[in-house]
Length: 599
Image (spheres, rainbow, N blue to C red):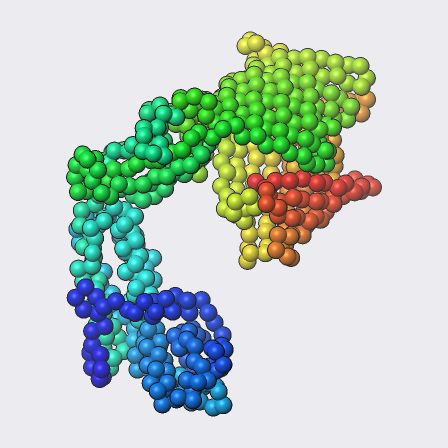
């Protein structure tokens, strides 16, 4: 590369850039500043000229320069010159020069980078089975080095690393570089990159074995139940993503206290029948024991609340599990239990037997409800959850005027629900949609004839980290010729923390002659909220809610608006809202307190 003609930066299997160059380029790519200045030991280094990225790379590449080294300038100068030259060459400036001076314990460097070397031609070819793998075709579009770019050594090595990483992810364990060369023409300031990757044959999944911590066969699950969790079949092409998915699925079942999935790379007995077969071993530890959660909280809808939950994810080797929950508050008391059975998959297709009882008191009207049912839930990861249900519902009520009643319903139903989110317990992006249909008929063990329709949508987006927008809408309708027969718990009410703020819980609905809310045929509510992060884990909110539960559209829309504060706790956002019922002649203030994610 000396002189002004052509030179090869890499030959044969390719020259490897010094590790320091690769690391420094990666570090310096994110740094910026008009002038790079750091204190290294007692000497101050000041760099001018060139781009901010180039200046910072020079400073980082120099490392520490002490005053003692400056006093021995004759020896130090050579090292400084080489470091500056190598730092600029690593970023594509092969003909760069620099003016270097020292004064009173300071090192001054003025860069004159000149014209950078750009990639004139980038030839990337895949030999072997990878040549027909669509994943490698797609990889070309996302590589960090492209034709016309400055010949950045870090981007060159990142390109090679991306190819090698994809090869390992997709089972090309014998892959290697057949050619990795960069031809540089310093006179024309261009470079031709030649990369040829020989992938060799793609490996395939072998048998999957489940064992205990000491290598003994696991006995926690029946073989067919364990096998249903494996997202690949023996003989299919290897993908690391499927190994990760298997590990995640096993953990999500909560059947085991620990899980480790590994590929067997060394032959063990007759386990490796072929050089391209990858047997998989799953090491699991004892089943999860009882899981108990106790909690106390408060919301303006149900006021002070004490709750308890008990879960036993695995009660037998068929993958059955049971959960039970209870809640005690001033408004509502409830207990429910669910017995879960894997149908075709312990996570993606399950059968649930449910039982629940509830007592709720709203505006002095007390309702009692008992539910017994069965439902089948089917959902693949990040996909729609489909629920087919059949439940028997017995309800009774007592009004303060002495009127009471009772009804029985047999309700077949179907539901669709999808939740997508990013950000864990405090999502910064997400959306949710749900749709539900239930029906009852007096010809099939019910005391009423109706069809119930419900739907809802949530949208959460964050812009520039600090600005969060939340939209919410809910709707419903009851189709019937005799609305008086529809039980109270099946009717629609609006108002409260998760509905129209500024109004009491379930206070919006038609009322009877005694002024008691009796529920409505229809529901329509919507909300728009803006949250601003003014301090880490703290947000201020502005919102407008509108809607009503109504029998006729002439009944009008109720509107609530206000402001609030959000604190992102370890278990999710805690919200304190101050809302006014602005659609009323004399708007009143209501304080709302609630917990949980907005989706």
